[in-house]
Length: 398
Image (cartoon, rainbow, N blue to C red; front, top):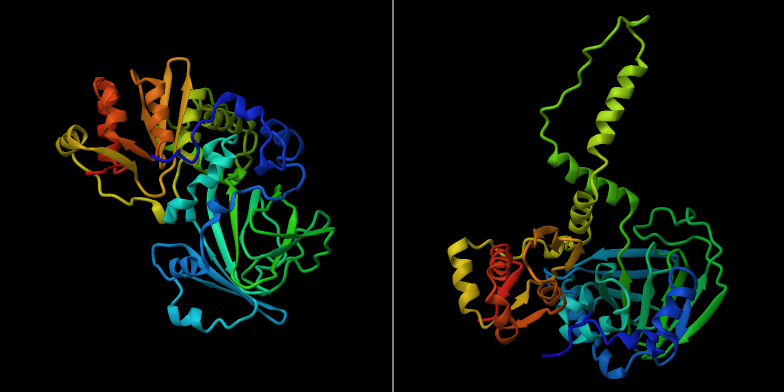
């Protein structure tokens, strides 16, 4: 079995220089560059880890269960066409100024999963996906900026990158489906060869243009929930936990001087009621936050039908192994005596489950029967496996 893409490396590896980080150790990179400064790393990835061709990406772009889009430039006009793309539409693209983007390549092309092992010094939940772009000479998605970190890996052909940290984020092209900067003034530029990596922190504007046909760039992006997303999700989780039996009450009310004026005592009572319910204890907050950051993309949500208890027991007892359901996100939390497993927005309370077992479930995409045999002898472990099977999060390899 190949190494899990985000498997925990030996401790000393975190102090060793890495080609992927331009000869920096993870600690040096996190201190000097992460969310701070761009970094160009030459010959950072072995070419054998970048075996993906244009025909593969274009074929994926025609499939309905794959997120894809095509960006095309005509003079000063930028066009965005979402996938799936018809084969005849690809044939009509011509030979200039187009780019086809395909998301979630780590799920659709398992051979690319080892690329994520280069980022094993980051929490798994902070990694989003591997997105691939295939372009003809001149192909681009225009000058833009992202609100998250990204590692741009050149897999095939060549591409020039220009970057700038001096621009107006609000100055975007009008009547354009893409967020393209109107006035982009580059401060630095490079041409990337296969195996080169360019790291960009959030809000660094960049403009990549293919300088050869069959140019393929792989983008390893980070997840960065917005404050609005975080507040919306956690508030929703907390609201669901409120019974609704408690109402506004005012047994000590006195007559107001003005019946049309809102009284401070009423505001104070409502404020206390609000803050009491929306200021959760740490355990409840962890459950809400873990559910949020383990949510899958909509494309991969509810990919399997739930299974009843008797059937899940039969599957757990007879399975030759399990695999994670496609696109699922796994992480876990341990604090004092509390253990939680989070998968695809579900929270599983894991009392009596060994942390090593939870960690194994999260790290290994493919679980052999031999590896699981010793864990299944524990009743709590077997119960957790049944829960995961019932939710369609673990799929039998039979």
